[in-house]
Length: 340
Image: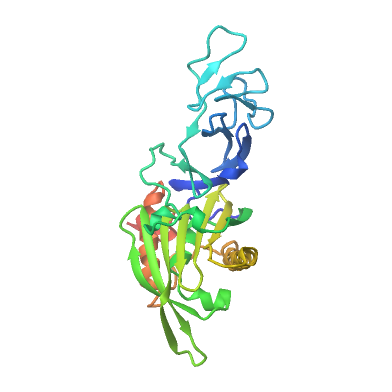
């Protein structure tokens, strides 16, 4: 695999599981940012994500490690570690080893998902994961929607930024999804780590005329490069969550979640089947994007048309803040720096 020109260790919140995957007492193995990790849920329900290896002799806590109350116990010698990664018990000694600690990660559960904060400089989180319901300020909740439908693709050769850039790409709908949608952007707000992109939808008619329909649109909230939530209104009331999390220096896991709004009907079973079909279609269209992204090469500088320039330039400038070098490994900027 060829290492991508963009750093695969950006700062931000990244999804590592869906909450339902980690029940009380479960120990969940995973690898992200080149690091073996475990997520475990205490009997209290509290979730912890930490590096996978016991600080005693290096046993992997995901293989035989188990939850005891509010701690995780290593299968090798029974050493117990708490939510802060501190050793709290050595069963054959009078006191724990207070000098050793397993690295833990800031973790939050939102959108029925588990997110960890990643920052190579070890800084605390400085923005929140956007909420797919409360984030749009319309009073909606998960109770207003049918159960979540999901897509999960592992270790694809793609970068999180590719997915975020799709949010300003108005031209791909016709060619990737074969739909006559023409987005008209009404908001590009890239002033903060959490950014906003809104657009209304028009349709291209048989003679390429624009058919306005301001009753339909999409609002998107991007929480850094790792998480984007959308609200679609008008034709289909749906919410989506896209999350791309680097696994190593070349690949990422992709998760996508869809909620379809509930409808008042005399036949709820038929309505739910219809909602499931709509969710499947949205997932199918997202899969079409994934197929492009996983074979994409980062173009830097890109050959943008005049109508694409503002959106792509804004989002790429915004994205720089999340990379350790402040550039994202941008080939053009690195060359410019070397020349100067």
